[in-house]
Length: 289
Image (tube, rainbow, N blue to C red):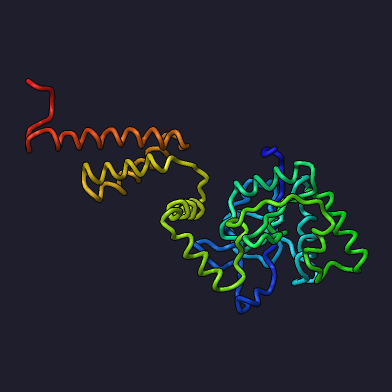
């Protein structure tokens, strides 16, 4: 099921009144805009449609606008769906700093498991219909019904859509956390600097900034940096990891090329340290006489 083709519609409009009218999708958390963080989580989508004013983004997307502009989430969703073809579509707001690919995979699997969609619930147990995966057919059906009943989708709350759908609910509280206020922004910025996650956040930010998709063995590289710092000199740690990356790129790139170069450099650092620890100063290391 996880290999099923899917599209994504990201809603990036709205007035952000509780942020004083700031451009919320462009607000940065962990060095990346909220919109780019969401786009990173749904990078596997066949097509990604962002509904809202055009902005710089970390990867190419299709842009759309609801009619009228500022017409609300259902009008925006209808505008986005015009550019999708897949059976399953992710519907996401652009203010989700902790959304991740694993959560979106779980949503897609749940949406395909007999119902019409799946939504996350927040820490208070409330549905979050803009962190969801839906079957497109039922969503189009409900949007058409609402447009007929009300004459227009503008201004209608998103709950009017979900009330007509058979949904599965997933309690993924961290991924459902959204930023509506500056206090929420401050909370998100503090959370990503937690000791338990800061390296993951930093690596994700660097890869996004450099346009990299590469997955590497972080523990292997950290061990190499430690060995170089302890066995050679502290400045050797960053220099060695840079050279490992460069060597891996020269060998064609990929996780295995990085791992192999790291193993070779780690073996060199071990030999270097052994010479320092086992031989008198100025004496070449070698087999016993």
